[in-house]
View (cartoon, rainbow, N blue to C red):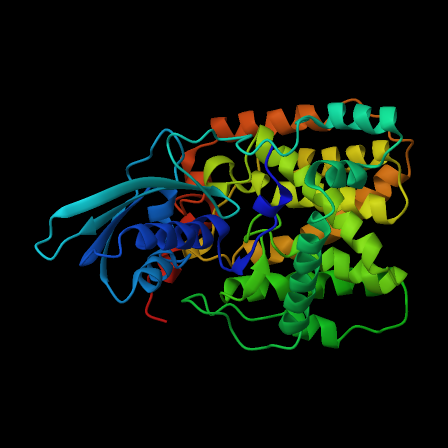
Amino acid sequence: MDSLRELFKIGCGPSSSHTMGPERAAKKFKAETEDAASYKVELYGSLAATGKGHLTDWIIIETLKPKKTEIVWMPEFIHEYHTNGMKFFALDKDGNVMKEWLVFSVGGGTIKELTDKRSGAQGVYPLTKMDDIMAWCKENNKELWEYVEHCEGPEIWDHLRDILNTMHDAVSRGITKDGVLPGKLRYPRKAKQIYDKIDKKRNYLVITKKIFAYALAVSEENSSAGTIVTAPTCGAAGVIPGLLRALREEYELDETTLLRALAVAGLIGNLIKENATISGAEAGCQAEIGAACSMASGMAVYILGGTTEQIEYAAEMGLEHHLGMTCDPVGGYVQIPCIERNAIVAVRSLNTADYALSTNGEHTITFDQVVVTMKETGSDMCSAYKETSTGGLAKYYDKFLKADI
């Protein structure tokens, strides 16, 4: 299982799979083809279907500048390795192909080639099931965050500190801005509006509205190509920082607690990525917002003093109750229903944690079982609901988007 450095990445939105991944691929190909006169890039499957709204073509063209780049949209071609495929061509001055490269953006900003295994490439974590990790913790009298440190080494805390600070900065920027987000939807920013109306006296509604405001702030920053953290993706980037910032203020948490909480969340997300997927194009929004809810729920239980068993229960519930959730972004923008969904799910994560803490942690379905179920559900899901914007909400707003606004 890979390092948390491959899960929590700092970058610009609006999409880890459709923007950050293609950017990383373009940078790598450019470095290997400096003598090219121009480029051509074919975009496949979901990457092509919603690439315009996700700025896929823009980020590739910008990255490959000053050389000219032709983008070829091929949404009808879906590669069996992953739907988010792209092929780069380096051309000489006569238009002849000098080099070509097939690469896939598999979610969370990670890129892979056909020769790469879909999971476990780096082998940083020898245990890849929650049940096995919990058994290790029990045998060694350790907590989940200590397993992360055991596998990653103490250097991981420097990375998580950068992640924590980037999350905090995204919230702080987002709650000060108003106006509308880029794109034809002219979607209004709401984080500042909600934050400004909060009565700062402590009660349940205050922390709820803070979570709303903070999660919206990050999601709106993401949608406007601001700097955020994949948690585990850009589309679900508001859940963890929104909840973490609110809990930080409510309980006056120190940095050590926050970093350990992020380690717990990261471990949960890594297990989902390893044993299923975090790609909305591959399994719908259950793989993105469901994974984020799972991570945030477990994180909150840790912060609130829960046991390892209660953390596992919260993580299981967070994913279980999003099984089958579709990814149908209107117009291909990471705005409707994505932004509101982040805010609602951030609060749901706290409720899930509270539920788990109200029990002794015993339950029937394990986290490992629900992860496998999510993967199978994604495989069975119709392609219209896997980030292609051809079904669901996207289908019914298509007429509106084609209007001249």
